[in-house]
Image (cartoon, rainbow, N blue to C red; front, side, top):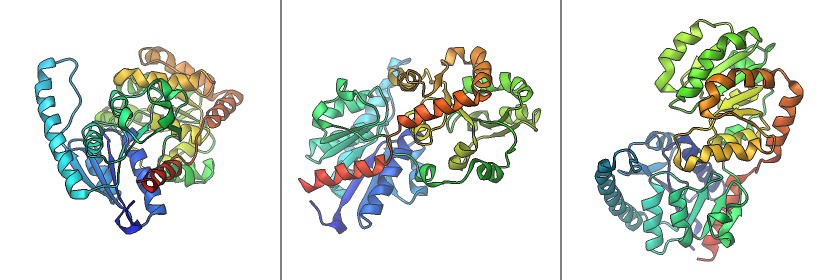
Length: 370
């Protein structure tokens, strides 16, 4: 193993906040324990990590990699070319950076980067966020030194002896901010005398959720519900116009910078069923209505949502049913304090705290044996 000053960690993956936030959380835990370690990120050159990672104070290298196009087979010639180019760049990164270990958090870039690391004898750790493993991680698992998961029963995808149930790392502010719901509402400009519904659809937005919210706002207003609506940037202008008609019961915003405050202010959350969001809801014992995206690999969001819904830890509304069911589902839940409490408590029982620290423990153990 390298000395403390020369310890070099490579973290690869991204594409969405669900991959980027865990990656940054792991990097933060590494820095806290090993202040002198050197960390390099590798992401996809046209994805959000190229902005978010440098903003957090880390260097990043971009690979020209993208996902396969299932609808247009001919378009995949370009995808294959970019994959081959990414493999060459990944090999060059290994040669120049010389990492002690490579960590993959999922997303387009983690495949070529970790494949090259394994080919060159560098230990690799996989962090699988979902209850249904992605294709890339399944392919990398055989040669991985360790696999960190957020759900039990993942030995149906991975070698059981390599698995550690750690949970998903989340943004530090989510768990460390301890303000009261009343103070969170004051800071966000929300009413303190109404039930607050938080709707989040990801940084880009979720069309079905936004359309369902539009159809529900009048009913929710009549029920005395105040809605904090994160619309995503693609739908910001239209949703802002809609919200303007309900200025006394809705705040619409493209993006919420202070999710730590938003979660604490909310009595109920409506969201997609991405692994990172679910982990945050569990750690905060927050009741939720989950609307899984149907446009993800292996339908993994539905499986994530089912893992909670079958335990009474959330209510699942399928994307196709949201326009007709979301309105009444929200009303029936947010107006029933006892059910809200039970759902939140069940979510909290599924939480796996300090995932980032557990993953750093495993990294240290791997490097100690090197």
